[in-house]
Length: 174
Image (cartoon, rainbow, N blue to C red; front, side, top):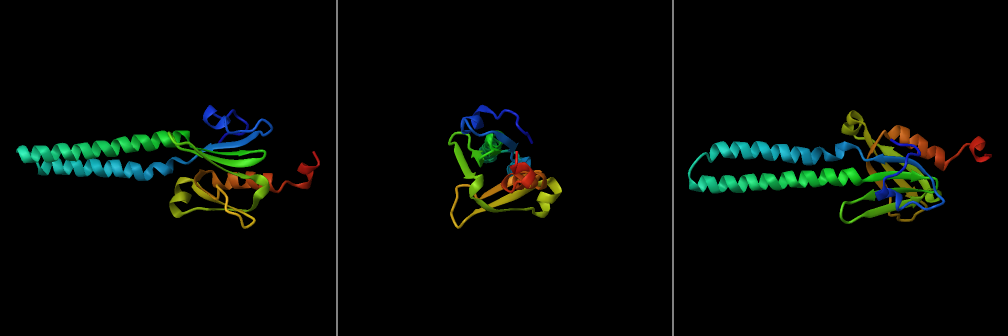
């Protein structure tokens, strides 16, 4: 979690000149659990099928197909890791942004002034691994940014964002 550190250029280009970055986090690596499971499961299945189809020309062709399929799973996993590495949740002095996508870049945002309610929830796995989901609401309007999944340090971030949304009287006098 960074506070005031310089955002990467992939995020910085979406910040307005008059706003300051307050919080920037990459989504929790738990978002990669399913792709990791798929690659490992595919590897186990490919290894078992390799033993089963041990020899023969028909078995050899089947093995080539099985290992090519596993290679596709591995390439998909590498793609997911690359996507994760460029996805950021950013809170600035004016708005919240979620930047996603490697080739097709998506930027979802909600002005802080439009947020009427914010909550977070954590599944059992989220509590064990340290991530949660933010749910943002605005006054009866659909927004581009309504949920942010796999947020690390959800309690800390929740309190910090709430402090920005509802500053104390001491903070507003400055």
